[in-house]
Structures are given as C-alpha cells and as structure tokens.
Image 1 (cartoon, rainbow, N blue to C red):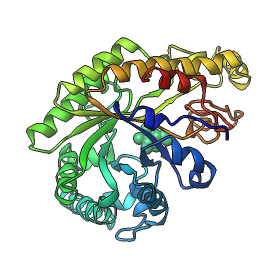
Image 2: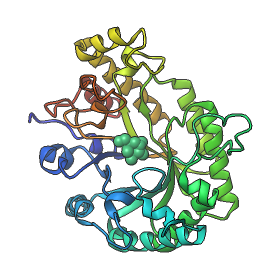
Image 3: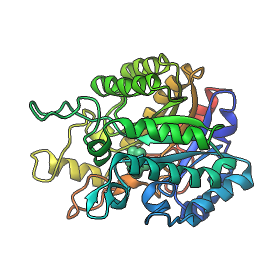
Length: 356
Ligand code: GLA
C-alpha cells in the first residue's frame, strides 16, 4: 500500500471517521483499519440473531474479535442495532406455541441488554438501541395500521412501548454510553416527520435519547438541500448526530431519481448493461458525491460527531448483493472511500485538503 494520509487524523477537530465491518475485514483491511478510522461498528455481530441465536445462548466470539482490535488500538465502538425488526430470531416473539406477551419481550430485551453491556461497556461509546422502527409509506386506508411505526412483529405485539423499554434497559446497563435511534431514508420529508414523532414520543416517555443515527445509504442522487434541512430538524430535537451507514450505490449515478428498476422493467436491460460496465467517469462521480456530502457534514460539525461508512473498501460491500434478482448477474458496486486495491479515491485527498 502506498503511503496515504489518515482521514481520521485529518478530521480530528471535526468528527470521528468510522467504518462498519465484519471479522473478515480484520485481516483483509488490516492497514486501512489501523490508519484511517477512529470508530468501529460491527456490521452484524452485535445484532440479536448472531449474538443470541437461542434464548440465553450468547455467541460473543465474532463481536469480540472486532472489540479486541478496538481495545488494542484504543478506539471506541458504535454498537449497532440490537432491537430491530430483522436479524432477530423468532424466539423473541414466541412463548411456546403462543405469541409472547409484551412483558416477556421486555424481559428478554432487558436480559440481552444486560449481557451485551457487561461484555462491551468498556469499549462502546454509543449504542444504536433501536433500528428502523418507522414505516416507509402511509398505511393503506382502512388498514388500521399506525401512520408512524413500522408494522413489525415487535409493534404488532407491543405497540411502540418496545422502543421505550429498549431505551430504558440500555440506559440502566450502559449509563455512560450515548443512546441513539437509527433509521434510513431519513432525509425524505415524510419519513423524517415519522422519525421526529418517534423521537418526540421517546422524549415524552422520559427516555434518555442522546442522538439520531442518519444511515445515509444513497441509492439515488443526494438531495443536498433536504440533507441540510434534515440535519437541522434532527439537531433541533436536542440530539447529537452521527452518519452511521454511509455508502453510495452505482444506482445514484446511473439512475439518480432512485426509482427501483427490476428485471422485466423497460429500463432494466439498459441499466444492467451500464451497471455491469461502469465507466471510470461514472465511478468517479461517486467520489464527487462524497466531496459534496462531506462539505455539508463539515458545515454542521457542531452537531455531527461521527461519520461512518458501511464498509471499509470497495472489495467488500453488502451492495454487491442488495436488491438484485437472484438470477441476474452480480452487479459489482464501488460505494466507499477506498477502492478495490485499498487505495484512497480522489475524494479522500480533496476531503483532507479541505480541512488543512
Ligand atoms: C441496514 C441496517 C444495517 C445493515 C444494512 C445493510 O441499514 O441498519 O445493520 O444491515 O442495512 O447491510
């Protein structure tokens, strides 16, 4: 690897630069992890299913391997997403053949939280206590569903109280960590309104909510004005902000409106052809999006404390498999700050120059 300047170092007086990754990155991305980042997130290993696949049976080893590198380097972690409607085993919702009643669910969340906190409190500065509990679209008329909350198993069984209880448990066992709610499409005005309602309700319930995690997965060209409006709205709730899952899909360049293109749609063939053979200009356009996003993050450094990319370098990214038809060819994605060979993209030098 050629000598590269450290992003995290350059941004020390702005915000932390984080990476989310799985244990396979520990070897593959060894150098980048040691030089470019000062906040780590487990991509999956602290979620319910991997961490407690059966009631009371904890699998700590994968999360431990990441936590141990953090400890070795003196880096703290954003712990990610225990209470979430997905990657949660069915046992959470069941009591034998019956649905679990809410108190049993809260007790399970409480016990899980206690175990995770005891194991990782020394290395964790922040928890995404609850992930993605708002809905994407208005409910169908007459469905009786909430206009704010996702109609998840948790919500069906507990109403919104599971969110409140999850925050109370985390506050009890991790009093020194910052507690975050985390969500996606957080800059869409309608979704933003739902997120604001969810957070206000937690605040009314007397929960300690320290921050909001803006996922910032881009499948469409960013609307920079809405991004600024969103930062101001969330900060206006008295919250600290983290960008928690930043990446930029090729879709943002090839299909900037973000309309889903599926196999069989008229535009699909042309899209697939372009996506399978992206030009250097198209890949570079992703780097330019990063420059603009970071310009805005820097403007709001008083409220943003951390910017985490969902991945380390382009050779390992969940986006290669996301949303594609299983029979369609894999569409390689280039969504991160470091390329397939772990070299910084042009935006990295620009981002560092901008804070010199
Ligand atoms: C969501 C979750 C993350 C991760 C990504 C995709 O945004 O919050 O934990 O699963 O999707 O990998």
